[in-house]
Image 1: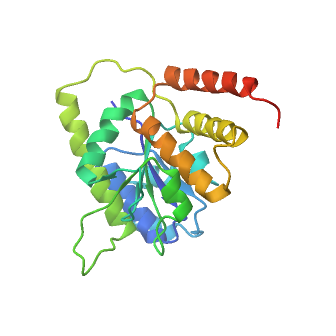
Image 2 (image 1 turned 135 degrees about the horizontal axis):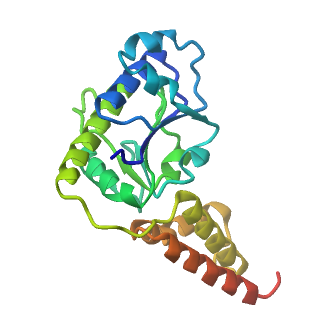
Length: 240
C-alpha cells in the first residue's frame, strides 16, 4: 500500500537537484511531491539524473503557495535548523516514523526550502513541527537532493516496519486547512473580545494558544466541534 506522504519543495532552482530527488523518491517507493513556484525552466538536466524515475519527475505537481500544497494534509513538517517556541524539533528518524503513523488518517507532508536560503520565517511559522539533520557544525548545510533522499529513506524504513505490524483503523484527522480555519476563528474572537491588541504580539499569542491543539492531533470531528463552539461564542459577542 502506498501511503499519502508528500514531499513539498519550495522554490526549487536547480534542475539537477530535481532529477536526483525524483530518483531518490522512486528508490524509496514514493511519488507524491509538489514544487511551489519552481524557478527551473529547462528540465533536461533533471532527466539525465532521474535514472528510471522520469515518471516521478513528470508527475510532480505545481503550486503557488505552501498553503495550497498542504491544504489537505493532517501534519506538516518543515526542514529547518531554527528553533521556534511551541514547535517540536524532531530528528529525521522520528519524522519518518510519525509520518507513517499519521498517514492512515490523511496526507502528511515534509517541506524543504530552496537551495539558497531554505525556508522563510513565515514558512517556518506556518508548518506544524520542524526537523533538521544533525550534521557536523563545520559543514551544517546539506544538498537538497541529499536531504530528500535521507528523509525518503527514513520514511521507507518506517513503512517496512509498519507493514509488519499494521495498525487498527484510525479516525480521519483534521486537515491543515481545517486547523487554519479554527485558528483564524479563534484569533477573530480574541481580537473582538479585547484579548489581542497589538498585531504582531497578538499573532504570536494566538500561535502559542493554538500550538497544543495542533500537537493533540485533532480529528476532523473534533476540529468541526471546536469551530462550531467558536462560531457560537462569536454570535454572542457584542458588536464592535
